[in-house]
Length: 158
Figure 1 (cartoon, rainbow, N blue to C red):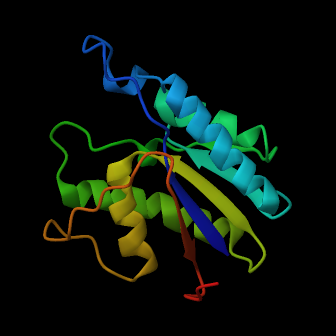
Figure 2 (cartoon, rainbow, N blue to C red; figure 1 turned 60 degrees about the horizontal axis):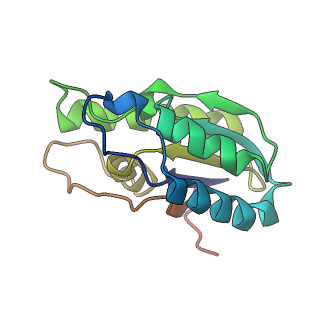
């Protein structure tokens, strides 16, 4: 099975009064998501699901990518950013629980699942697929906007 982590497209941070979960993507972000959708269209027959944080910028990115793939989209709240008062350990655990649920549900060599979330969520994906246990001492890993990162359940690189 392959899991493609995708950091949401460029978001609009100009209006500080808009809560983080309601921030949408920019015009440039729309272009980024369309370009990624075009790239992922090449594997659309193997994409069986898209999981996304319900944050507006993540959902909007997933919706644009899905114009090229046409897979079912599921909101996954455990892919939200770190919450106020949450430790890095707790954050990793909830993300890794969501990843584990997806892997157990779809694990098959031919399946691809896309997960659209925030940049800070890349760490738990790296840790999960490399067998690193959650810890407050784990390295902080950050993704770049609309950057896909491929992970496999069999440890193979292709």
